[in-house]
Structure formats: C-alpha cells, structure tokens
Image (cartoon, rainbow, N blue to C red; front, side, top):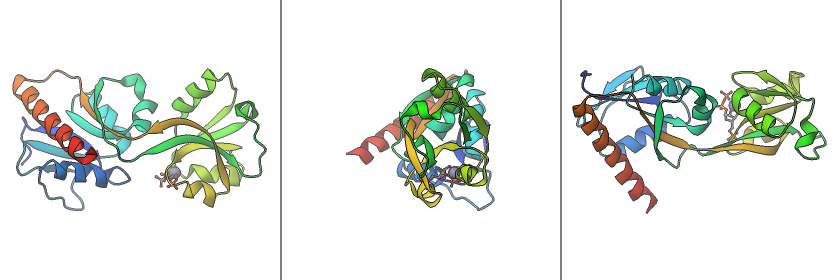
Amino acid sequence: MAAKQNLKIALQKRGRLSEDSLALLRQCGISFSIQPSSLIVSCNNFPLDILFVRDDDIPTLVNSGIADFGIVGENVLYEQSCRQKYNIVQTLGFCNCRLSIALPQKTTYKGIQSLNGKSIATSYPTLLSSYLTSKKIDIDIVTISGSVELAPRIGMADAICDLVSSGRTLSENNLLEREVILESEAVLIQSMAMTAKKKQFLQRSFISKIRATQYRRAS
Ligand code: PRP
Ligand code: ZN
C-alpha cells in the first residue's frame, strides 16, 4: 500500500532507463513486484513507492518535491535545467550515450563552421542552441520529438542532433556523427524541497543503500 510517509522515486515507465533502474533497486535489496500496467508500486521491505512515468517528466516531479528521488539521463536533465531544484546524488554508470550532431554521409564537413546557415532537427533544442551559440554558429533548429534521424532523408533538415548509443540508427540512416555536444549517463537526483525529519532520515538511508550498491558494482 502507498503510504503518505513513504519515499517516492520517479522511474521511467518504459524505455532505455527502466530496466537498469529497477535492477539497481533490486541490487540494493529492495523487493517489489510489478504488473505490466502498474503506475505506482509500493516496495515490500522498504518504505518506498515507485512512480512509473515518462522520463521527460522526472525532473519536474523531483523539482516540485512530489518525488523525493528520480533516475534520469543527464540529457533530459540538462535539456530542462532552467527549472532545477534538485541535487545530483550519484552518477549511475548506465544508459551511457552522447548527444551528437550528425550529417548525411555525402555532405562535406570541414569543422563546425560548415554548419552555419544549415537547419538541424532535434529533440534537444535547448542544449543544441546553447552549444552552437557558444561556438558562434547560426543555424535554424527544427524541433521534433522522435525519429529524428529521418529528417534529412525527407528534406525536413540538413542535419540532426540526437542521442547516439551503439551508432546503429545513424548508420542505418546514412548519417555520420560529426560533433559530440554532451556525454550523458543515468543519474540519481534528489529533490531539494523541504521534508519532515522522519523523511530526511529515510532519504539518507536510501542514498546509503544506493551508494553502497554502486560501490560494490564498481569494484
Ligand atoms: C534513441 C535515440 C537514437 C537512438 C540511438 O531513439 O534518439 O535515435 O536511440 O541509439 P543507437 O545509437 O544505439 O542506434 P529511440 O529508440 O529512443 O527512439 P526515438 O528517438 O524515436 O524516440
Ligand atoms: Zn531516436
């Protein structure tokens, strides 16, 4: 049963982060059982409720204090960083990827200046625009929420800026990675919202479990 005083952690419901996030909790000795349609699950042996949400919503839930913790990719976190009210407790060493600019293989590329005046499709307009502004490059950003690698093939943009993990999606779409703008991995974030003393104790105990498990995994 979900109890008011339970800690809450927001995890990705479905996708790249979700399996490793759940595995980490289990490695901490926390037990729970999930039904395919579960949106909230209370753990059996620790006062923790797991909220299953879209990863884009995790920073908001933690910033608002609705969730005490969240596991999210740095890519999502930094894209939304203007609203930050969280601490990064721990980098978690999974879901490693990079946010990169890629161009069609046949496009000549002579450094970042070649991007001037081009259009770039991305789901990360904030990170892309701040990177290019720092390099004094002027481009047209086309925001799209998925299947970004399709954009150059359908004449929607000259280039893309998207996550690269194995590189398979890029090569399948005849794209070459040209600039890495962010290296990203999953992180545990904690809300900075005020909480009762009893909850602070639980939060510290949860963080120690995670840190001890990470230490074991790394050694
Ligand atoms: C992600 C990402 C890339 C791809 C990278 O897409 O946006 O397209 O995976 O992985 P790879 O380098 O191992 O091929 P996802 O599958 O999440 O789909 P979406 O972006 O269309 O939502
Ligand atoms: Zn994608």
